[in-house]
Amino acid sequence: MNLDKLETILKGYPAYRVNQAREAVLKSLIDDWGQAQGLPQDLRQKLGQDFPLGIGAEIFSSPDGDSLKALVAFADGLKAESVLMRHDNRNTVCVSSQIGCPMACSFCATGKMGFKRNLTAGEIIEQVLLFARVLKKEDQRVANVVFMGMGEPFLNYENVLAAVKVINDPKGLNIGGRHISISTCGITEGIERLIDEPVQANLAVSLHAPNDALRSKIMPANNKYPIDAIMKSVLRYIQNTKRRVMFEYIMINGVNDSDECARQLAQLIKSCLSLKLAFVNLIRYNSTGSFAPSAPERVKAFKTILMQKNIETTERYRFGRGIKAACGQLIVNEQ
Image 1 (tube, rainbow, N blue to C red):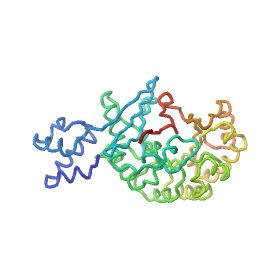
Image 2 (tube, rainbow, N blue to C red; image 1 turned 90 degrees about the vertical axis):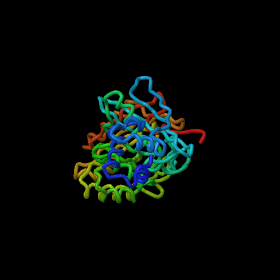
Image 3 (cartoon, rainbow, N blue to C red; image 1 turned 135 degrees about the vertical axis):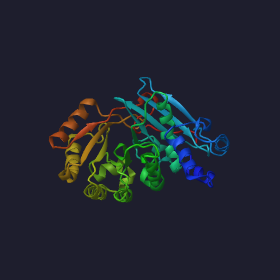
Image 4 (cartoon, one colour; image 1 turned 180 degrees about the horizontal axis):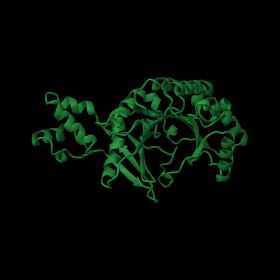
């Protein structure tokens, strides 16, 4: 859904008509131009032909009802997955930024797809719109958007930030910047660029190991973006924006979940602690066939060590495992 195309189609019409059309799509969440009663009938017919609003997607629901996974099909036939997570009356949409992923993290199913292409800003927005329309029927709305689906957002920086601006815009989807999070495996150029962006989106860093030797084994990107370089960029980000950074840490049995790993991680995070703007989010590994998740008691022990070192630590709720929609499980076959 290319909103620039919408403006091109409406070139020559009064500006208020363009605004009406955008608001019908992004605020009224119509899925058919016939529902845009504020527009003249001939214009509705024109837009119905030139700018259809249908979003091709197959939707799967988790057995417990806390998650929906959408397999979204785009114009070229390629597909990406996105997820709606429901928790305590807060609805969070996890969007993909690429089809596949070039980062090849060993614990992530998406990396096994290889990289197909970047998603456009419109294709990213479509993922949010799809679930916003679903929620509208339940008198609910999207509360949060997280760029934690397929792909590395900062390798598609321009399209991701263009989508973020529409998602955040009061005349768009009107989701506050503090409710938008972008997760990166440590692309330092993207972290540095985000410092100067006017949108106050949250930054999350997928760390997953406390030292370069281990991180390079499970995340090949570490060979180009080692921990020291990432931490320097994160510290500059915190100093300049005064925003909190979340360090994501997947808990893999026998790989990165030892007491020593916890102590090393605590020491690493302490470089950001003076400003009290960093915390760790522990994620039990969701099976993709390569590893096993850390046992609950091991996660608890790991968390205890971090907390004893005054590192704020949370555990991520595991959404969508029953439909392969949990963290690290998104993959599209047969593309």
